[in-house]
Image (cartoon, rainbow, N blue to C red):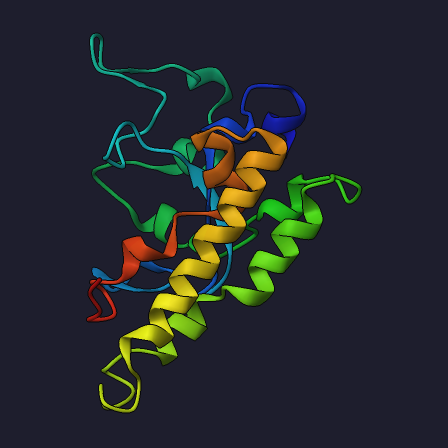
Length: 180
């Protein structure tokens, strides 16, 4: 929070990982549902390479003002970092001011598009004949419709969308054994 307050980080540098969203867990070494909502620094392009990593000189663009996780990381010994996982995390609701006009849409999205709904629509949980494709398509379409409405109404760019709403749910379909 102090890095945000001091302007060393902005929400454009952050992405929301929503509760139950499939993510890689360094604890298990597997992709699994996130146990809680949290934010993390965005990656570069289609990778999770930190957006502050400067490849030309292999340095950090915010080294003096890097987050706790970065200060804790020792590539040769990850125990200290592992102990921080899911401890004292912040989420988008800690950052967004309560009277932000976008808050109503974020709450609607959180209520209507939880990953738990997508998880319950999977063939792993139910027989495909019982859960037809239109069930999970509706969830995906609701997610996209709320995002598109927010983008149009508030002129959001991709970085803002990813902070306010997290990754689009359709990107998780393969994890759930679902297809288009």
